[in-house]
Length: 77
Image 1 (cartoon, rainbow, N blue to C red):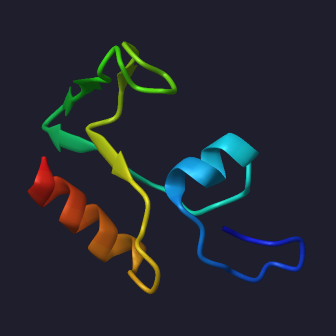
Image 2: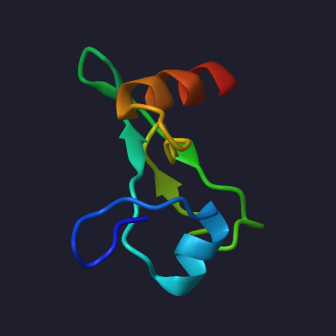
C-alpha cells in the first residue's frame, strides 16, 4: 500500500481492498487489431463479480515491478 507520505508498505490484497487503502494494481489489455480480449469476472468474486473487465489484472508482489506483475498474471491466465 502507499501511505500519506507516498511511502510503500506491504499489505495483503484483501486487506488493502477492505480498508480502501491506496495500493498498486496492474490492468492488462490485450488487443488483436481492433479487437479487445475481455474477461467476465467470476460471480463469486468479493468485488465486481459478474462484470465484464479488462483482459486481466493483478497486484505486484512486494518488490515486483508492474511489468513483471503483468507478465506473471498473463502467464497464469
